[in-house]
Figure 1 (cartoon, rainbow, N blue to C red):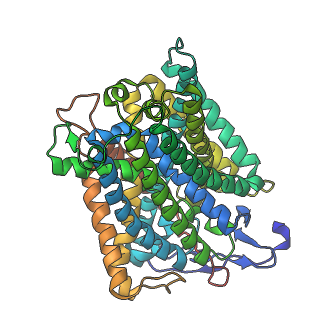
Figure 2 (figure 1 turned 60 degrees about the horizontal axis):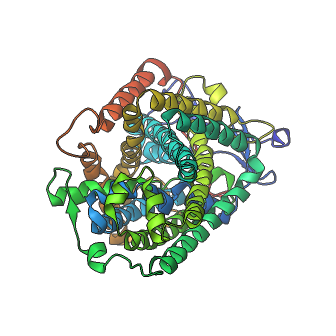
Figure 3 (figure 1 turned 180 degrees about the horizontal axis):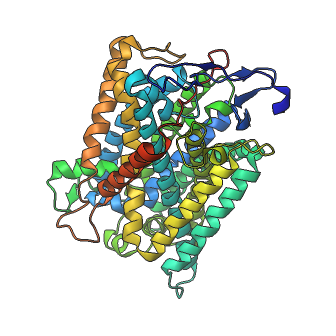
Amino acid sequence: MASSCHNAPQIQEMSGCDEEKPVIELEATITPQCGELQEPNHGVVQKNFSLISLAGIGVAVGNVWPALGGSLLTSIYNGGAPGVIYEFIAASLCYFTVAAVIAELSSALPSSSGVHLWATVTSGPRHGKVVGYFAGWWNCLAWIFAVASVTCIASNLCVQTFAFWHPSFIAKKWHTFVCYIILSWLSCVIVCFGNSMIPRLNIVGLVVIVVGAITTIVVCIAMVNTEGRSSASSHDVWGAWEADIGYPNGFVFTIGMLNGAFAMGTPDAAVHLAEEIPRPSINVPKAIATQYILGFVSALAYLITMLYCITDYEALYKAELPIAEVYSQATGHSAIATTALLALILAPTLLCTLGLYVTCGRTLWTLARVGATPFPNVLGRISPTQHMPVTATFVTTVLVSLLGLIYLANSTAFNGFVASFILFSSASYIAALLPYLWTRSRSSFEPGEFYMTGYLGYVVNIWACGYLITWFVVYCFPYALPTNAENMNYSSLIWGTFTIAVGALWYFGVRKTYVLPMSLSHDEA
């Protein structure tokens, strides 16, 4: 199909770039009759996605209530049951503002590059090139670590569910690692060679997330008060604050918002498919809104239900798989009901893994197509048969597999890498949102279909930037006091090391060949 599209990318000199070299204009050439975006020298991607399938990948990648269920015990340590609820609400409200500004930018400048493009444009011709470069790499690294984290969670769920039915089975780290590798490469194969069915799988993921939440809530409510058993009291759920991690209560609440941030902190999931959906300036903001509304409502209802079901915290603290113990208490220790509920949390987590590989491969591809990576002609290439970035997706799978080896060798080091996801993603958002706030009233681009006018836009943008900058610092603190080598927070060290490495790549490698990222034309957006 590429041969039937004859329009060539426009070339234009741009300020702030090497004056001797023409660079690609911030607008990709669209051939409407082909229904495809034409990437210079790298092949084409097809518009396979609809609004519902795009919303599906946002909801599936967000995977909010299963993620919170899997980390429920960690959340409980930060204030007990009330801390879980109030910290999640606070983090969600903050991320709603981040998502709103990202929806604005995705409407005005629709592109699979996402924050990479936005940071370039909003930072201006003088600084945009380097700021956009760092924003793109921070975002790409965040998604790589997110893939590793969710793949490990899904693998552990598989192993522990098996152990739940086989009490004599002793789960070892290598069991999780084997599942991790199988799941990683199975996901890679499905994403690379089943590109045409990915939109349908995203719709399945949307249905599974919603139906799974409703079913889990209804079953637990129906069974928790049967056979003479009773649920937790409202005081226990809403008022019994309890924290013993060494920090004052106010800071416990602040640092406890990290759990909600991990669950809600993927507002750009749908953005990276902007070039694969019709009318992205309208549909991408709608997909982001769907992701956040469904994610927040389902997760809040799920959390409240689960906290009413917990009546024996000592058993919960001792459990190998805490969420299985919660389900067991809710169902009167019914092994069949508990397993069924575990399947409802495992299924969306597996679909989330698929969605993450879709997104992660595209973030690396968008960096490579502008020369921001080593071997850009290889990593930036679209497969002529699969019409998606097969090589970039394959390379991200290799990197995720290497992180799995780190998990096998040292789980503390692995946890440090995946925990740094929130720092990398926050840094990438700050790089785009902060200069956008500074230039909001005099931006060099036209607002899109979704735009917050007047004071509302400023308030939301200021809140988003203030939250991201403040909590970027907060999330560098140790998880508990006193600190030792096992519970130390290594996120800031990892973020700093990779940032230096990316800077070295810029200075010694790509700064002379790197060109500006592209946005869809207004006609196609």
